[in-house]
Amino acid sequence: MKLQELILIGVRHSVSAVSKANGAVLWTTKLPGGLGSDFVAVACDEERVFAHSSGQLFCMELSSGRMLW
Image (tube, rainbow, N blue to C red; front, side):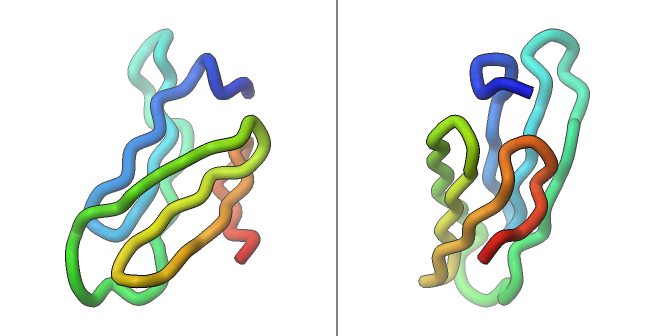
């Protein structure tokens, strides 16, 4: 799975990867915590997805959404 093939969306304390080709949700990862704003800031570096929500920073695998830290 390549970053160019995906749209990364952060909302309501979760991050989802969506296929640009067909709109299918490939994975969704719920972020721990859940207190505070529903807003999730998302950045990616070709291998990892970084998400910031409710004052916490998280890191996930781009290919699966598995939480790394």
